[in-house]
Length: 256
Length: 364
Ligand SMILES: Nc1ncnc2c1ncn2[C@@H]1O[C@H](COP(=O)(O)OP(=O)(O)OP(=O)(O)O)[C@@H](O)[C@H]1O
Ligand SMILES: [Mg+2]
Image: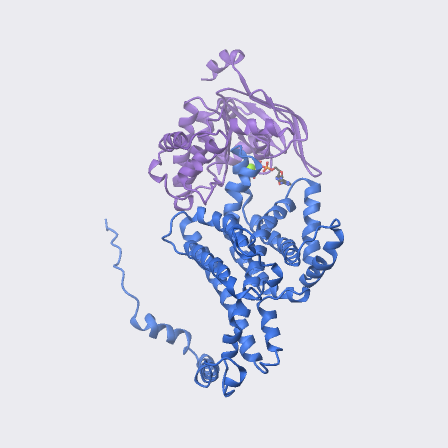
């Protein structure tokens, strides 16, 4: 898979480009010179210790957090303070959160059709058809008329994935999508994500599921203290880490 | 290998359920509680006895002047004789039907909103908020469609109380939402304006506001524009109430988890879509107790318009009490006014509880 990627890399389209991105929370320098290029169809896994800036990095991509220096270009649109650009990018970038963040006052189906109807101005009927298609893809069409509070965590997270997919995004961002789930539900969510990866979706996943990283990722990125420490294909990354810090981290999470 | 067989569900022991169980567990479960129960029952008995004896058994119900009263118990003749004034103020007798039409219409709309089985709640609510006030104004004020004009100086009593309260409640709500959103805005100017507005109005007593509205507002008006007293009072009450409403709304907004804002943002919803479709519908549910609380306070506060010369229910009752033909009816008068206020406030409180319960179940 990796070789094939390398061969076609030149011809492939850049989806996300982060150049020397810096961010501060007050005085706290949380992201330091982040450089990252993500090609269309690539699957990136970001890992690293708690507080290293993984969430902040991907949240900058859809402007949930604002960066103070450097450039972020998503699908040809540069992220500036221009609301038009921000809304344009958010339409093309789906995001799945650790705590699902479904809208509890709307049914599963309404959760899925809301953005297509209001943001994409899609007729309700069409939006519902598309929503049902994606709910089938994540294997919960029979829950369409329930409220999120009536579903298990794993089901809620799958709804959240379907909700994002309904906007037909170019890129999907996942921020620890399985870390709030009970062990028996992790697999059902990972299965959906693997399927999505196999269909060629461009994905950036912050996750500690190293099994997922090994099977799915084209590239694994290790972050610490606001910097990208190491970046490699999963095979090299896990078997032959270059940096001491990476080795330490891997020994900690793989051995426990 | 053993198989797991769940034990069957058994009913709870009989003396812990039903009325007997409840009485045992709540009223007679300890010596202090038993004493409290009997003291409480005695107090209730005293109050009930006085009310029944004074208010019904020894009371007078027929007659049309003060001398028809035996004065051994309550004399409800006083209320009867003044009833039209208490309810309609100085509205001309032959036009009172117009007020009644408005009352009946309001009653129908309210019933339609409360009774579960009635469909199209959204449309009815919209009509109640926009269509109804317009119709009510045309009916009450007249001057159109051959209806005789009844100047607002003649409005009074319960009718005026309700007009002030409903206008204050309906108009202060959007103001409250606007300033609550403003106070949470990222834009420093809008945020500052909102904070100044809210803190200003919350810092002054309503009496002062009403004085300012009746004395100072005309000073700012250009020559020749004559805003009438009632409208000035309405503006004052609405602006004042809007500040309180803003804080209630802000409390509701703050209770919505950050993740809801982020999910809406991540889906590409605009600010107004996010607020209107995601945040406010959820926040509103949390705000119901606070909203009703401020509404009840407003309803009672409308009595303060007395000081700028408007005669709401309480003021009219008071002026009837000073009538030389009807000396010594203060108890009856104040009981009546108190009862009417209580009925409305209690109704609002019950409605809010129902609404809360209903919204809660449908979302779990
Ligand atoms: N809103 C904020 N204000 C101030 N500091 C923040 C804020 N959000 C995050 N931080 C800090 O920024 C750093 C990076 O946070 P971030 O959430 O990106 O870490 P993370 O790598 O995702 O960690 P985790 O694995 O715990 O999710 C942390 O030290 C955190 O305390
Ligand atoms: Mg994180």
